[in-house]
Length: 111
Length: 115
Image 1: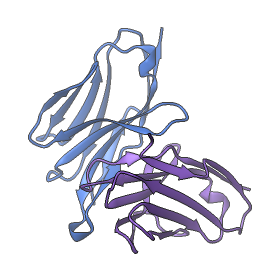
Image 2: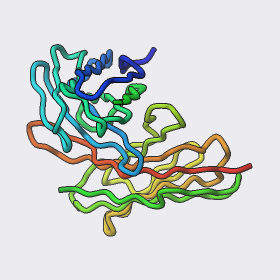
Image 3: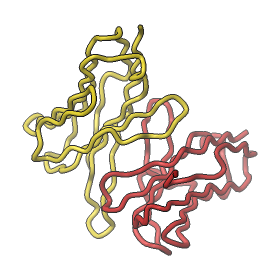
């Protein structure tokens, strides 16, 4: 059974609209992460969290917010979606903060 | 901060050949290293975790070598088969103090194994 799930798996959004990507983990992990994947850039860290009700900025946080309402759930919020945010987004969880286990990804297209 | 350079970005080999992917990193104090495999349209799957005290790890059909002196990590698929065709990513763990650790990823290598 998948331990890290993401929803939706695919989404088309309009420029300027609000987008919420959700992640749920059943690993009982403290750490959760949001990455975006773009060709030629690998994975880049947007936000992460090591405890519920607290989030930290990653390497590319501009244009994104994050929410960790519980240990199991971590959301990524795009308040005003832009064309440049078209990408595949991955959520991951980690118990110790080292090896990370990834969800299936969400393909976001902003038109 | 830590930077990870991964080469080559694309690699095409024949079935049965070896395929070598190399990553160099900048922080000599880095402690944990990882290789992930991503099949087309799929998520990232952890292949191997390497500790700084380990120089060679062997898995099913591949060898990972860590050279701390040269701050280099390599993945060698010893006899590649078409099922190995995928993107491979190295990652280096960086400590953020009380905020925990994060992974710095290489840009990935797209491996194609032709029959």
